Image (tube, rainbow, N blue to C red; front, top):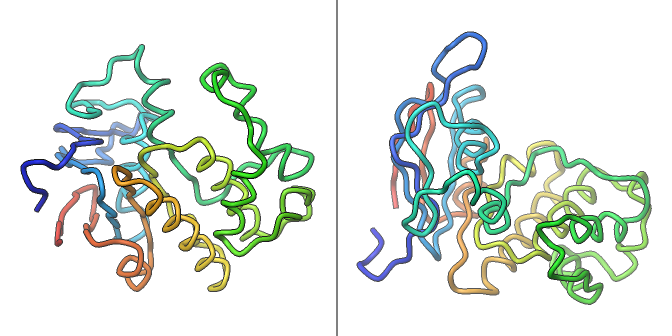
Amino acid sequence: MPDATSTELVAAHGVVRRDAIRGTVLLQPTDFTLYAGERAAVTGPSGSGKSVLLRTLALLDPCDAGYIGWRGERIVRAGIPAYRRRVAYIAQRPAMLDGTVEDNLRYPFTLKTYRDVHFDRDTAARLAQAAGRGADFLDKLAADLSGGEAQIAALVRVLQLAPDVLLLDEPTASLDPASARSIEALVSAWFDAAAERACIWVSHDPEQARRVAARHLTMNAGVLGGDLR
């Protein structure tokens, strides 16, 4: 368990999610806290609510009950853009823009939220190198990338912005083992680069969950459990 000095990052307080059309409960009342320095994994069968949990923590979908907190404070609507800058959600199938990898990496800096920072090719190249890719990776056309390369590019696009928390929604589910290990290496390098970072990795693979996390949870029928450290 975290000690008394552990920093609370993301917390769910009695969070509930329902299907907007059918009213079915997708996420049963959930209390959960992610602390700085933690690497958590969530496993469970397809349709059990793993992605629902992550999207709720990312505030991509609204809570039907309860609320999400950040560093001990409830997040109000006006604070959501700043929260999403600190807490990044990575989908299983990344969306890539036309152009080169570098064009894709430059895109976030055109958004209002990131107008105070600038693209740094050296930083991006170092991140790509952590995933086993050379400097020429940034010059590749997005349309020519393999699935693994596209996921690496998507991760670099996020990691260059230095978030505090990563919410990884089965980012290697459709990749070959070598590509999956490259993604794991990239996330590990990001995690090790700063003391107060944390991540949650949703995976269908128990072996991967053991590799990437020290805290393991299970999801079944919308119920989060099995919090084994």
